Amino acid sequence: MKTEKAVSIWIWSLYVIALIAMILMCCCSSNTTFCLSMAYIFLSLHIIGSHVIFALVSNNWNGFATTGSGMASSIFFFIGKRLLFLDTNS
Image (tube, rainbow, N blue to C red; front, side, top):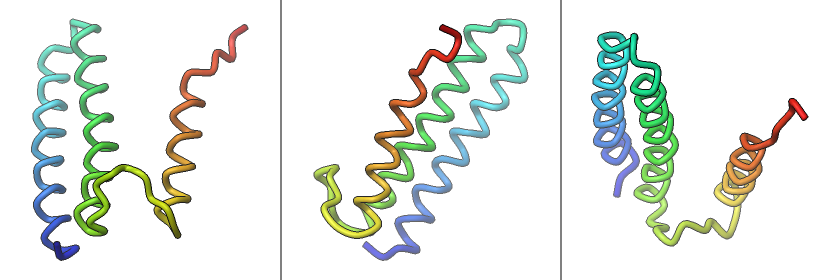
């Protein structure tokens, strides 16, 4: 798939979902659990959407990039995801 088509289709769907999540966060700001779930959905879709765009452009759907910048991106993403669970308070 061409890069422009893959990006234009997915980026607009991510923008719409993010806009809906932000509107719901503003309307229901008194409910902390709901706001945190909307923030989680927004951030998760951003990460998943970028991986889908890379898969559409490279036609690599197995999830493992074996060469080049795709491999570096996978390593950084894996390490960064694990660093989120570090407990710095103990």
